[in-house]
Image (cartoon, rainbow, N blue to C red; front, side):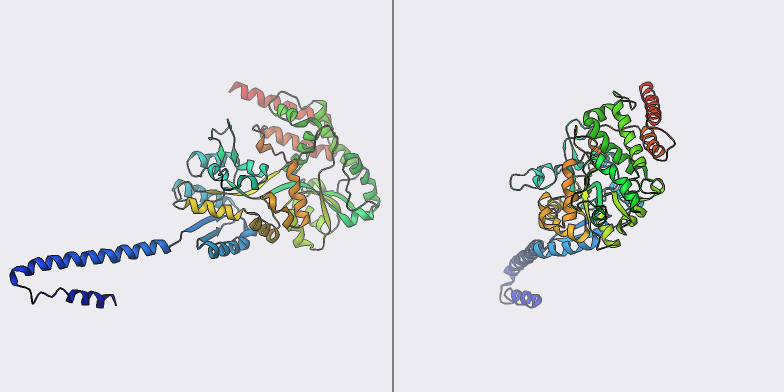
Length: 459
């Protein structure tokens, strides 16, 4: 059709009837008009193509349990906006970490990605200019994006003023979900012990008093993966905050308070009391968390100390399990109980992406309450959007409400020497198996602490 039109058009410029001395002038005119028509077709065609095209947003992630839900949401978003979302899943291993680092070095990161690593790894990407500062989008007047999140979930991606990483203050990531580590209890077994299944023990005394009843009934008490010492460290720090408060814990890490202080002796003593009360399950010191999860899911234990990820685990093991979520029972009412938690997974926007604005728009949509509720229900992960709690199962909402009590070491601005942490956690294991007293462990931990402080001072 185009060829026919051009041919017909050209016939208007036949030169047979034009005098010879004017033909050259007409041929030049013809060429100029033809060139103009060609350019007009070209411009119009490119403009139409430009208007019709939509970008593709490429996202790398490691969240294997969420990939089917992500793919479904990607289809929905494309239907709504015409923007294609391409989720690429990689196993959560060192290979993924290396892939991200290699892409960063080659300036070849996708539009959106996640980082597996500690906050210092996150900071290194920000310093290198790989991650977009999302603060202007979070605080824009035309939306309340920042206010939709649990503040302590957002804090994981926030670098505050005078942070130790030398990063300009700002929010550099979007939390997709959150996690909290608390205790869970079997409602049916609690009822068999003569207790209200909806009223678990709130104080440490009430909790310890159940040990004898549990043993008499032939049940197991508290299960947890305490061969993985970080879980011991988690519960011990919960009680440290409860007994002495945040300021004294941080002062200890700074070296201003000794681990031989009476409050720290009391923290160590709690684990001795747990052992002596009979509340701890047999073989706890050699138990990995997967074994602990199987025992609780199969209704062989009354209590478990675990993270919110257990909801999905228990559902797969025993869909009919009836259980509730509780804070670790408090040792004192002097200070509130604190738990570990915060953002579980986050996405970052590539600062060099050609589609930054579209990537941000998608993340705003992905973290809206409806999409967050869908992710929570389909994957049993806690939503980062605090407005989604009314739309998710109650047991997930119970874990999410624990965000009010979250106090994670990553947010303190200081960290303990790794050798001190190891001595602390291993020491509690030795207390539980009866090889050392709380006082002996406190003295050993303080000895290592002083050694590390002296080494640091000499540097």
